[in-house]
Amino acid sequence: MLFEISQILERSIDLRDEMDAVLNAVSRNTGMERGTLTLLNRQTEELFIESAHGLTAKQRDRGRYRPGEGVTGRVVQTGRPMVIPRISDEPTFLDRTKAREKLRKEQISFLCVPIKVGTETIGAFSVDRLFADSVELDEDIRLLSIIASMVAQAVRIRQEAIEERQRLLEENARLKNELKDRFRPANIIGRSGAMQEVFDLMAQVADSDTTVLIRGESGVGKELVAGAIHYNSPRAQSPFVKVNCAALPESVIESELFGHEKGAFTGAHMQRQGRFELAHGGTIFLDEIGDLSPMMQIRMLRVLQEREFERVGGIKTIKVNVRVVAATNRDLEQLMNDGSFRQDLYYRLNVFPIHIPPLRERRADILELANHFVEKASKATHKHVRRISTPAIDMLTRYHWPGNVRELENCIERAVLLSTDEVLHGHHLPPTLQTAEASGTVMKGTLDARLDELEREMLVEALKTSRGNMAKASSALGITERVMGLRVKKHEINPRQFRTPRMV
Image 1 (cartoon, rainbow, N blue to C red):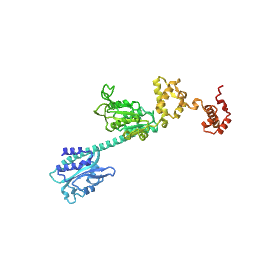
Image 2 (image 1 turned 45 degrees about the vertical axis):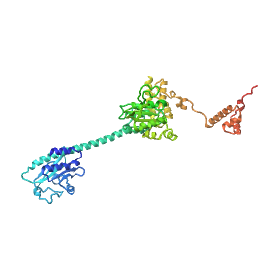
Image 3 (image 1 turned 135 degrees about the vertical axis):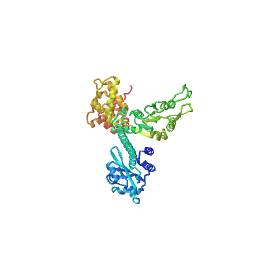
Image 4 (image 1 turned 90 degrees about the vertical axis):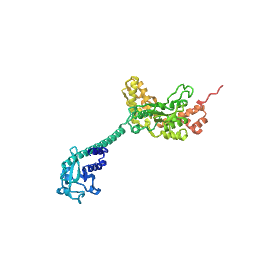
């Protein structure tokens, strides 16, 4: 019986699933008339019947006690077993279930033992059996105590499993929050809100095999994001193969991507694996995917759908396990409207889009990026630049950066080469970044004076072009000859000086 009970209790960590079977086993082997497993609800401080044998549902519902109340309540309160040879002789036996009203109570013995987890009593295990002088109830108590100990062990394991599950759920939630707050690949710099949104998306997609489409202007760092997704994924130990679809000529891109068989075309002297085969088990990064030709788009669609292809000149179908990360700086929606990009390929690629903001939309990252590039360029050029001057910082943060991070890196590299005093100054930056204050070219004069200068300059240019012909000059400027005459007079310009002298 004990072996059977141990097998029953091992079947499930949820006590409620198996206790009825335990009570049935006890009944079959001991002659138990009724039996109950009573547990203590710590929140309500009330004992209730969790499982029962020989009781109706209504009787079970009536079996509720407080600790110290009745025989069962005293067992739970004291933590010691009790034996009632005849329940008719025990005034504290309450019979709340009313299961023994129609029975001869002098013929019923009641045995109740505590269920303990450590030093804490969490409930009681009780049985009814027919009274007989020949039966040693102490032996029954020892047997019930063993069963109660086994039940307590099952309860402890169940509680530990529930606590461990809760701990894992809390830990998982904590890690997710940390990932959301702190996920920042080592090769990408950025603390701005715009970049944090990018990091959040990267964290969500990294662990999956979902196809990712990275979008953004040229120079924003799409390849870095693709690499970070791969190296933070389960495929990190497998190949990361990069392909620039715009850099490969139309005549070789198919062979580069899918490989070729020996003799497939002139110059194919041996079999060659394509980039998709080389990326098997890992990730392939298809940069500038928007520049694929219509024919290659069809072949790419099949690979994305089926993860299979044939080499150029081959008939054997090759299956690959590869994750696809694509990138483009082009407007794919406009290309679809123009008919130069397939809609079905777009929807296959655009499963999980990530948009990387341009540098002008994440100005909070410019200084951190600049400092990083200063350190990088200093090591590469064996120079020691210690800081960026305040005017240079102002120039960097005010510039609109059409070339994004790539342009910033190039500017910093140039400035580091020009620096001679361990400081990166504003005059070390390219002319496109120079402000009027930094270059000493602040405009002077009032607006009217500047407009007059511009007007005079335009009049002179028009007269030069027309060789002093007032009619042609006025037509070129979009004004009447009368207005032209007034403006020429105002600025004291002599149209005759622009006429070509006659040849004698």
